[in-house]
Image (cartoon, rainbow, N blue to C red; front, side, top):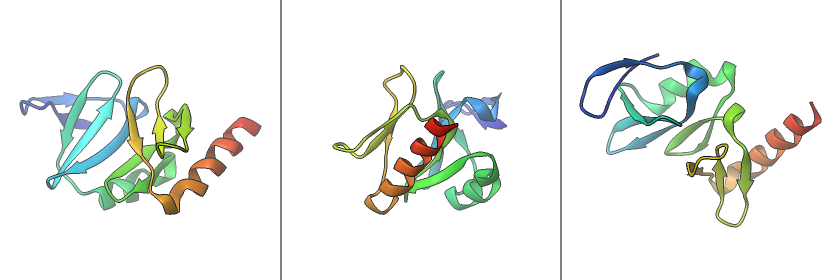
Length: 108
């Protein structure tokens, strides 16, 4: 995926590296373990394009790569990614979806 660094330089990243997409002030941010990038599109378009490979909309401000979720914190209502300190919020209506996704993944 071709993205922009925060200073506007084009950069290529692999979709598997993406932890989640977020929207802030009409700008899409792509979050990875290595950093944060910008992608010129909308969250709806991203969800439509990536839903078939494991990306889910978990809040109105994010689309998350569920394959990279390491845990769900029900108290803070956030999903966490691996050993990093990165996390993003889960809306109340999507809590059951996250729990089911993680349960299904554990069964595999």
